[in-house]
Length: 324
Ligand SMILES: Cc1cc2nc3c(=O)[nH]c(=O)nc-3n(C[C@H](O)[C@H](O)[C@H](O)COP(=O)(O)O)c2cc1C
Image 1 (spheres, rainbow, N blue to C red):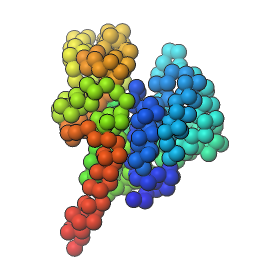
Image 2: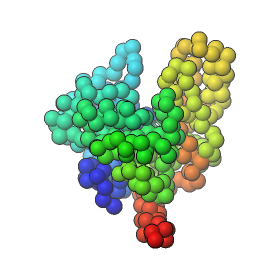
Image 3: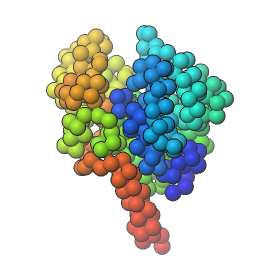
């Protein structure tokens, strides 16, 4: 399938794997890229620019296809070494970067000068337009369904995608809630040029995470995610568990007065415990409503091939019936 996104990133299928903390290692990115999508290494998970450079090299040893790096700009008292991460990316020769979390304007000139295509992930039309105006090549439009940070506007992709199509000139992909070929076709119908998936890629044989995480996704339904940190305006959609329910109880009791310190035990340092050790009640970890559509643990290649053949079949047969 050819779209503006496959052409931009020189990939076979219009499917991107969004950056995921403690999931986006070389194994994940290479598996997606080898299957014809765009795999993404998560920059901050690597800890230092040197380790990111080493992870990019490891990924390059596993695939000769294009892959990218996610750079998440977090509000932090002591910010990560962003100049160092950007330099490591530029020097590595990687040709795609997914930015997220905050306006990437400061880092765009350096990335563009190196010939890197930048896709910015946003949860609103206004942020997408801002990304377009500062020179991003594409955007990932993250609907309210998404795993991770859906923003504070709460607009689902059913409305957000056609709204993005009304306004944007640069290509965009549908992000949030995606996991099937029918959703890819629907996204294309609404003006997107492909899809970005996070949660669905975790439940694959290739994802370098503990088996407990994959099993939890298969067991979960679309009703099992919760929104945490809403009172802090840092909303995150996570899979529910004992720690998440405890956190929500704290938020309820403290109301508007809740501070990060009140819930730190349930959100700080959680990812290695969940993704590496498989401690499923360690705290809140990002998970989308698409969990309800996850029923198996295929390889990444099987998953991408399935999505593409379902999409092709729908376009060639089911939709034809309605074209009178
Ligand atoms: C476990 C997990 C960790 C994530 N970590 C990050 C991250 O570090 N940076 C980022 O930009 N997005 C992160 N995301 C968001 C994904 O890149 C993607 O936008 C989102 O998962 C799309 O929604 P979906 O899960 O419904 O497919 C994460 C998502 C998950 C599920």
